[in-house]
Length: 163
View 1 (cartoon, rainbow, N blue to C red):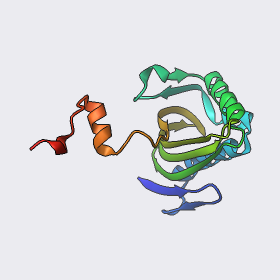
View 2 (view 1 turned 90 degrees about the vertical axis):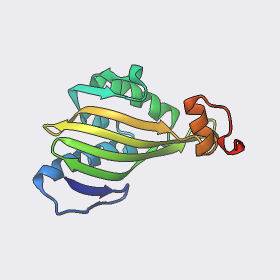
View 3 (view 1 turned 135 degrees about the horizontal axis):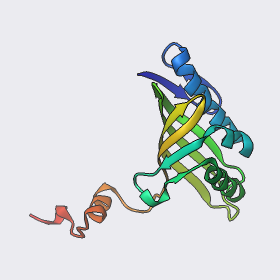
């Protein structure tokens, strides 16, 4: 496995650049550039016609096809006119590309738009053919880790309060 670190301004290779790594990394660069340039056609062109999106944490959000990619990004560009994407990390293993993203911008009502997470891309013939999508909106109001764990397991009691 080869690790590659990417940033908005410059992408730095942690390992020597090799053809098997450089093509998928260049594809991620093109995708990031298309997002930051708000170039819908270039963005959609990064995806294969048989593209499949899986969202394991939200299974009903999965979809197939570039048409849905286009609809999603039309909405994002309209609702967050200054959206930018940063690829914090990228690692290539054969035809699988692990990426960590930070997407930010401002909505028309001046509230912050911030999403962070991982997208695992399948790539073939210089196109994204699949994604396992773990990118989520950042929320800062759910409390600390103890509060979140209680919420997830359905236990409203405070374990620190018991003896």
